[in-house]
Image (tube, rainbow, N blue to C red):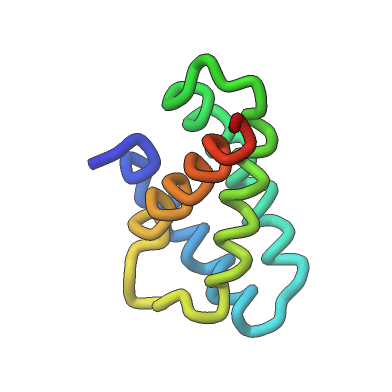
Amino acid sequence: MGELGDTSNDRESRWRALMASAQDGDHAAYGELLSDLFPVLRRFVMRRWPNAHDTEDVVQEILVSIHTVRQTYDRQRAFTGDVPTDVEIGGAALLTLSL
């Protein structure tokens, strides 16, 4: 399992609950989710692409990707199971920005 998938059950449960609340229109829960995710994603991106000068841009692209699929998130699936796909999208954005 990847670094993002190695989260504790408590964190996974919290993120799933926050995403479900966000799907139901709870803006505060969505803000909490993004606040929780930002430092985790930043560390992950910095480890994955240690020479990236635009880590913040990649993290933002990942968050945009999560936002884009927010309404289609399947509540029965693990939240962190979908995040690696979003990280790949962010990585592709990094490559595009670097060109």
